[in-house]
Structures are given as structure tokens and as C-alpha cells.
Image 1 (tube, rainbow, N blue to C red):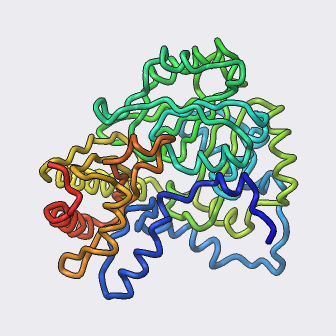
Image 2 (image 1 turned 45 degrees about the vertical axis):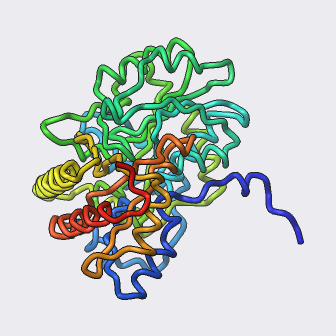
Length: 399
């Protein structure tokens, strides 16, 4: 039998999705599973986007431009202007979701064997994108003890080598919900300029900032304009993950020209996804006001209930819609599987993402889990009550 590629063997399973078979088995037994494992909001997609797809009169669904429809790129540029990011349609490549934007950015800017620094815990798929691109991830650990703030710049400098070509940040952060401040980003900018690095800024959760905190885009850092590659998506902003439309944005013309070649190789982004995304730019302000209020309440409820559980600690995140919490357990992978295979409370259980998959060294997340507050408050209340009961009887509990 032919062998599988070494690259294929190194590709990690998603910590967010790998427990799905156990969840399906639980559902077959009549158990309600609260999905806190994945960033799939239950917020309704804006009507303006839904109607654009329902009411379009296309007779032929054609290929679009490989960089994305010009009409959408013009509209997207207007959106960026509205949030203080001055870019033009020629500064962007529309991609098949934010995932493809990350992959195109890495392949356009870095060579096989190059090193990329990522503060961890980090979005697990960065590992997969790095493996696909032949890159070496150099993690730098942030700690739940200081709410996952950016590690000191001196720690970054300790691991920079001649092979280091870039840094990835996700702001607000997935999985931790931490919001990097302008001061923290300016410290990174100094480092990027000093060592002539790329700064890849995943800003998918830009709209989700709480307690009066404001998002500062890496695109607005002074003196490193040609070093910054922003990665974006409509999935979370408009609660339409399934349209698979993202964007790679940079003022570095050479990066855009190179990314376009990768875009041409995969032909084009999705036609209906672009129709929905273009229309979504006209989403009224009241939609975001309501969403912001709802997520704030969900966050407050989840964090409060988690911290009331004996032995549990959960920082209060300033952005996105995730938390990473530490639990009095022996192993987060075992605990999350046990919840789905061996536990129920009132015919309910909870699905979380083990944080081990968000670290390069799984042992660093051995007692941590990521939870997404993407369900309505009633479901979060029930899920947290269920989780509290589970912790009382989990056989691997550590007191």
C-alpha cells in the first residue's frame, strides 16, 4: 500500500473538531450537547446579506476575478475606511475564508524552513498552515496568570534567529479573548522594524471589543507599513461562517502581487459568498449594537459562573467571544471526551475544546479548555450548570 506523506502525518487534528464523533454518539443517545467548542455564533446573519443571495438574478454563476470581485473590493475598502484603516481595492485579495488568507500570506512571504513566532496559546490551525507552508513555529508562551497579555519583548528577542521571518498575532485573540493594546502593538512594531520581519495581523474579531476598549489595527502602526499583512474574514463580523469569504490586505504591493499568483492557482473565491459579503457591508449600526450588547451579557454570565465553580479560574476577556479557563482536572483532552462519552446531567452535556491543542507543547494546556460564548444566555446558563455538576463527579478531578 502506498505510504502517506510526512507532511500529512504531521498535520494536526483540529482540537476544535476532533471530538465531533463523540458528540454525535451522545446526540444519538438523546443527550443535548451544548457546543461551546467552536466559534459558530447563533446570531442571525444580517437580512441585507441573506436577501442579496435570495434575490439575485444570476443566470450563470461565473468565475470571479482571482483577487475577488472589484465591486466587493471597492465596498470592502469603504468598510475599512469606516474603521480607520485607509486602504484601496488594489491592496487586497479576497480569499476563501480567513484560513486561505493566512495560508496565502505565509506562502507569499516566507520560504520553507523559515521560522515564525506566535504567542501561545494560539489559533490551532496556525500549526496546520505552518506545516503546509513548510515553516517552523517558534512559540512564545503567554500565561493565564496575567490574563494572556503579550509576553515581554525581550522574550521575543531571545528566540529570533537568522531564519526568523515573521510574527503572527490574533487581535482580539482566539482562543483567549485577550485584546492587545496599541502600546503592545507598538512594541512589536519596533521589533519588526529592528529585525526586518513581517507582522501578520489576524483581525477577524475586530468588532468584538468590550468594556469600552477600542481595537487598534496593526495596519495603523507607523514606520512598518510594508511589513504588515492583515488577515480578515466576514465569518464572525456578520455571523456567516459558511460563506467562506476572507481577505488578505497589505500596502506592500509585492506581497499582493505574489498572493495573487496563489489566488490564480485556485481560480477564484466563491460567487455567492462575495454577493453576501458585499451586501453585508451595508448592515445597519443597530445590528452591531444589539450583537455587542448580547455578547457582553453572554461573556459576563459565562465568566461569572465559571469563576463560581470551586477550583476554576477564568480571566475576563476584552474581546472576541472565547475564554480559556483552568480547571481542577488531570487532563483536558480526557475531561472533554469524558463529558461526551460518560456524563450527562438532565440529559445534557457540554462540548469544549481542550486547550492542549492551542499550545505547541500540549502539557501547557493540560488543565485548560477553551469555551465559546456563542449560544443564547439560557443555553449558556444550562451549560455552566451542567459543567459544574460534571466537575463534582469527574474521576480525574484534582483538588
